Image 1 (cartoon, rainbow, N blue to C red):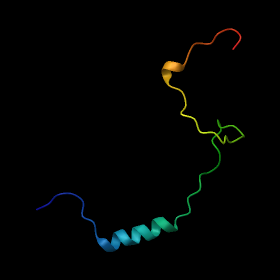
Image 2 (cartoon, rainbow, N blue to C red; image 1 turned 30 degrees about the vertical axis):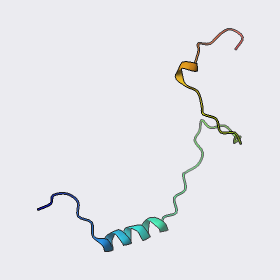
Image 3 (cartoon, one colour; image 1 turned 180 degrees about the vertical axis):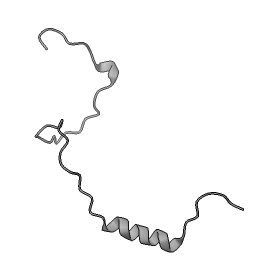
Image 4 (cartoon, helix red, strand yellow; image 1 turned 180 degrees about the horizontal axis):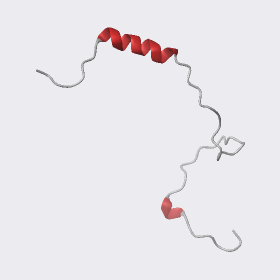
Length: 57
């Protein structure tokens, strides 16, 4: 006897159709994003590259 989840093929097919029909659109922009998109994609910064604020920054 196997314990666990039992998947019915017809139910999985119906769920796939439902998932494909859902039109998900996020509810807008995140408040902390800027107004311009960058064409450049960088690797970001490692924590080791972060330094404390220096006068003149």
